[in-house]
Image 1: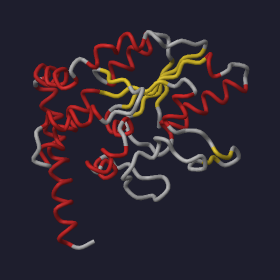
Image 2: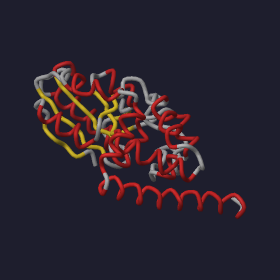
Image 3: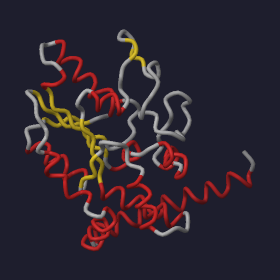
Length: 231
């Protein structure tokens, strides 16, 4: 890669990092405007979040807290939970599993288009398991059958769509989406509301937007889910 190509990219990522740090501090110093902006940007889509948590059912219920890419773990652990419960007599349908994508794990809530457009692999330090390079696609959305293998187990179905088919629920933090989309917008000289709208349009099917990741973790535990860190 030439210096002419790499220098603007380094400058863009540096500006993004500074913007995120500044916005993150501002959100804590002056939380009311940040919350109001988040609500306006999502057009009420988070209003169904409480009702969504009321649908959690099952004999065994857990919530996985995904804060960073953490390699395969945010997706491998839900599958392991389902597999081992099945091995001890509880079928998939009798388990309640929730994955909360928050902080630096939020890009996994989005379609491939946004990964390429906003350089999520570089921004969030999320590598593609196949190439070991910053991902330009969501590696856990509709993967190929042989994309993920575990020694001694073989191929494992840990794609988001595959986990959803097994009853796993995914939600994503709206506060993190608001902060990061605003920082990226500043780095790309775009309007924050336009970038946020683009992100909301690119949410994967079945993924629920929630007011914040920590809010979601609290709600899940109120519904009887045991907490597990997805790292």
